[in-house]
Image: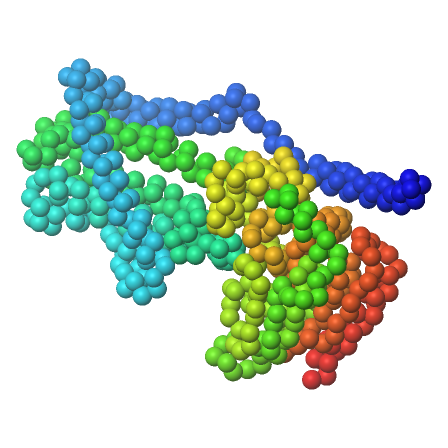
Length: 307
Length: 265
């Protein structure tokens, strides 16, 4: 009884072993191919990053200050019109010692941020609808692009008449400036989605809202983030225009009002202080918020060039 | 997951006579408003469960269109298509993996859309990656993988779908010859292990003979089924073997004949 069993199983074991051998062969071959075609990207050392990314802008700023100082010394413009960098710094320190700098900054910044967030809440669904519903796109697509090129300062006088000299007027101007960029950014992002992703999504069973959430929105993210970045720039710009033109007791004092006050007093260092603070906030938000987000999005997709 | 794989193994080698994975009856497709030459004209094709069929043809024979119709990405102008079971999976020439997700998350998304509960997805995705021999690649981004690895992740994602039918639209056409050869071996192994039915579109005659149990040659404009070959060479075959070469010569001659007709017309 035992002998036939053995002869039956023997060839089976042999075949299994051969199979297993071929299997391991293929696995090894594949591991070799994978290893040949993958490579690790090395990280740049910190000192090189410092040298390549930090040094150039610092040199540029120093150059601008030097040219400014020379222009001041040569009196290219009268002293009251072109103060020295030192004068502007002193004017800033006067504000600083009064303890009003943070109040002024916060008044403007909180308006800018709140306005931007409302613009995101309106611009995002608007962009989605314009991108996906063809007759709505035909109807309001051109208007959205047109609004984007309209300087939002133009909205200040009508907004003041509609809403009065208060925050509502300011937010209206900010929204009219930022909503079109955010919506247009999303539309551009959705337009650039490779059709293959949408087809692949359909094959996987993503339809309707599932398709929007799992495929369309993440696929359009690079364009959307670019739109958000531009939307912030437009919010900030519109806000400054509105603050500068619409001054009133209800509006408190932001950076625009500081500038306006400087103009009333003929105080050039004060005006330049306001200009620099506006610039620094704009650059700061972009560098601290938008640039990292944009780089993260691009790097995840392997789109970031290793600059 | 492992269980379903091992349970299905027997059907892979011996296709069941009864039933079908997909059945096409007089399928015709005309683009535009129904005028002009049909892209596909009266296609009758039945693929048995667990069967591996290659659709072969020159450009313009409508083989990709046929896959789109079976995948329900487009509708036939007339005729019927019956797919048994769930929505078929479709692999493209381009991997079509989502670059905003990791390799593992791409597979998990397929599982999620199929309705697999959250706590089981990670484990199932890892098993599928293991199946295509990319066990450690769960956290890899798509751009970090080589072309061959991407297609294997795409295969794993396709296998994550519930459907028994796997449609492949020239999935290895963009790969280098060495990688393609290895992936042929892999696909044969995985097909045997999972027991899926496969409809594989290609214009590469040797590839078709290397992989398929049945090769279906299509003519162009209009796309019709010109001839069929059943291939008995045992798997795993080698693309360089005499058996594969001899049959490839025969099929290539037929294919050239089909192409020549267009020059005369």
